[in-house]
Every structure is written in structure tokens, then in C-alpha cells.
Length: 312
Length: 312
Image (cartoon, rainbow over all chains, first blue to last red; front, side):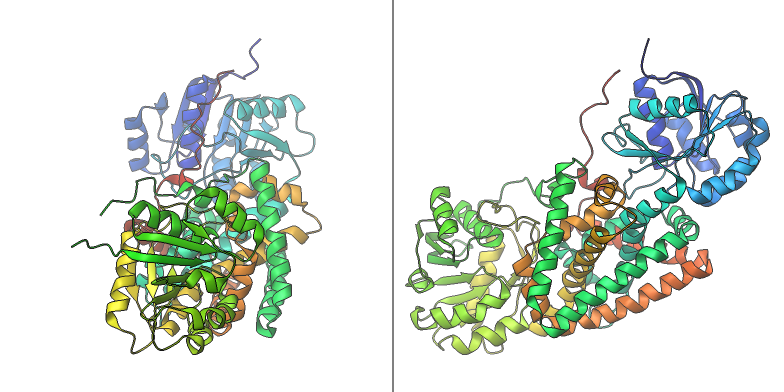
């Protein structure tokens, strides 16, 4: 028996970075007899057709989910409720319905009421991404060695959870199961707050009077450019994240603000020891992340210029 | 005539990431007949000796600068004043004295009084680095395509400035000249504030009650890990930066805090349009940085797993 699950038909609603990467990875791994997809815009559908990664590109969500035994919504969190309402009546009994949203409490709240009792609802969040979006941005290796968090509502059939777990494992991810609320707290600190702060500081830099934007860009290698990568993430996706995980983000922001005040006070008072101690502690956390394989220790993320210095 | 400057003897005080990279690059480019270095710790001096990159490793700063026609202090900003006092009486008339500090106003204030009128003082700041430090962390390509900012005090001999400019150009950097005060403002936003914020948020994540450190590390690929790289930078260097560029950092922090309040308010009120507009604007800034070659457009900095997904 093959450990990897094979689905007769997988339907992907949305074909951006995540949907497109799932399609490519599932194709490489031979996890589906047929992959059907759709996207809201005519332009995206046409491009997906050209790319030739999926078997069929259809016009409506209802058509896409017809007879599919795995349906994954790969769309912004705010669109999940309306799409669930749209596809609910067309789902095949016994199908697994999932998503890839970065917020889980709101997705469960918005989708669950529209899904028939005959399907298995297993929300998911692959913690992986890049700053790029659109149908061309996906690649089959995106999920390798990254975590995918499943948040099945109480009472979900464990066999359906296992099947989805096997699917994500087959495309390279490590899977963990937790409650939607805990997920939303964990992601608030590991993802949502960092994005909010990066979006803020990049905006701040753009508004300064005495320092020009062109200077900000030229001298960005001192740290700023790393924030701009995060602040280049998809605007629609992130608008929906902040609107739908407000409470957890505000809670983390409260702690962050207190900590920022503490460091600012140390700076103001010239307390070098407090600064040094804090900076030594944060350096150790970095080591932990590199050790567990969630980042590369290559200096500067391998941005290193490999071309030799020209001999003059 | 060769465009690249050749020095009889270059003295590097300090052999960490920057000093070690200058030595390696100057060696590759043949810019010095002799490179002499020293470091505060016996251990570092022994390691530099083993590495075999420089011609001589000496014990004292006074000995290192003897007969050198280019002296570069590659040490934390806070150490520049005392070292200038120490080496002042031993400098060769006509020598160029420089540094690599991330703050320029304080360096000029602390060093200038100790330097004899017979030398040329040309402070410098190469805007390049990685999160690693120590004698083994340097590499000759570090400065390629990065900016090096020179901040010569008024009245400095233009020929000395040109000579140092040619040196940095020869090891790959692009050079710009500005006043120390303007430098400190530009770097406050492009480097110092991003570091302060990264140091803060990584500390915050380490202190949470409901979310464990191990969860923070596991799910760090959602954005947090980029902050940890910045927050892994050398603690001594950064303590000195914040103690010595307090005013400019506090000014930028003020604007940042106002902007953070604005975004927080939009989130609280559910103003999706304001969030979307802001996020669209910041995405454009990222494009600017990639276009001028100060970062790579490779998704996720090429962290991509290149190994193929295993067939199961």
C-alpha cells in the first residue's frame, strides 16, 4: 500500500502562490488523478491554462468542486465565508474541505455554517511563503521542511484529518494539529506582528522629510531591506489577516510596545548593560531557529556576491 | 598609472567581520605591500595568525600603526575615542586615519581631538554586514556593490579623501560623501531603527506565556525568522550604536510610533481600505530596492530547498 494519499479529483479554488505551489507539488508527487482549478479573474484563469499545470481550469467555484474529493480554498481569509456559501450545495458527500488561510478562528467561524454535514472540514495553514504572488509565483518545493498546521473542529472524523496530514506530508511539509485559537496566538507573534511592524517602518521611511526615499533605498543593506521584503507581501491577503486576527495581534502588540519602551528607556539613560544583555539573549534565539532547520545559517541569507572582485 | 591605490602598509585595528573582510579584499586586490593587524584579545590574535591572511599580527595598537600610511579602526564605535588617544602620538605624518563605525557624529567627536594635525582623518562607514562576527566571519566579497559613506570633517585634504575613495572602490564598494549628521539620520532609519525593532520583537517572543519558545521557533518561517537574523548581530557593536546615535534614533522612533498607531487604529476600526492602501505603497518601495540592485528578487532570498521532493 502506498503511504501517499491519492485523490480522484482535487479542486483548488484560487491559483496564487499557495494554490499554484500545491498544484505543482501534487503533480510532481502524483497525488491526484485530476486537478481542477479556478480563479476569480479571467486573466488568471487564462494564464493558468497556458501554464499547463492542472488538468482543467473552470469558470465557477461550483463547477470546480463538482465530484472533487479534496477541495482546498487558496484565497484570502476574508473570501472564505462567501466561497463556502457558494460551494456548500455542490460538494460531494465524503469530500475533505480545507483552506490555507493564515487565520483559523475566523475561517472556521465563516465557513463551517455553510458546509453540509456530509463533508469533512479540516482547516489548514501551511506556514510558508515568499513575497511574490500570482499564478507564476508558485513552485513545487515551497512546502518542503515547512510546517502545516491543521485545526479540525471538535468531532471531525480522524480518518479525514489523517488523510489531509498524509497529503501535506507527501508534498514535503511537517504537520501539527492545534486549536484555531492557539494557532491564531502563535501566528500573531511569529507572523502577523512582524508583518505589521515591517509594513509600518517601510511606510515611515517613505514619509521622511530630511532623508530622501532614494537614500533609504541606497543604504537599505544596513537592515531595512529585510523589512521591505516582508512589507512586499500580498496586500489583499494581509488586509484580511489583520481584520480577522485583530484581538491576538493587539495582545502581542501590547507586549511589544512595553518592551520597546523598556529598550528605549535604556538607550535614553545610557544603560549599556541592559542593551548588551538584551542583544545577547536575542542572538541565542536565532541560533535555535537555525539549529532546528527553519532558516539557513549562510551569512546574509546567501545574498553574498559570488562573483570575484575584479582585478583592476 | 594604476587607478587602484597601493599603500605601503595598512594597519587594521580589530579583526572582526569588517576588519577581516577588508584584509581579505585588500589582499585579493593587491592594495597593500604589507597588512598589519591587532586585536584586543590574545585568542583573536592567535586565530588571525593561524588564518595567515595578514603579514603581521602585533600586540599593541601603537605598534600596529607604526609607519602605516592607512590606519582603519575596525572596532565598536564606543572604543574609537580611547583607541585614537592611544595611537595619536604614534601615527606617521601624512597617514590616512579612518574607521568603519555605524555612527559618524560621535566618532568624529571622540577621535578628532586625539589626532595630530599631520594626519588626514577620513571617517568611513561601509553599509554591509552579516549577522556573524569574529575573525573567521569575514570574506573578500562583502563590500561588492554595497555603499561606503565617507564623512570627512570640513577642511580635510581632498587628495586624502580621493585616495580612500579609490581604496573602497577597488574592493568593490560604491562611495558617497556626506556630513556626519546627515549620515546619522539616514542610518537611523535604514539600519538603527530596524535593528532596535527586531531586537525588541525577538525579545517579546521569548517572554510570552501562552506561546512557547519552541512554537515560536518552529513556526518562524511566517516572517519572524527574518527579524531574528537582524537581532543576532553583534551585541557590543549595537550597544555602542544605540548609545551614540540616541537623538536620531529617538526622532525616527517617534515617527514610527505615530505610524504604528495609525495602522493599529485602522485594524481596530476594521478599515480595510486604509490597510490595503498602505500595504500597496510599501510593496512599491521593495520593488525600488530590488531595481537598484540592493537586494535580490529571488523569492525568499533563495532559501528555496533545491532538493527535489522525495518520491514516496
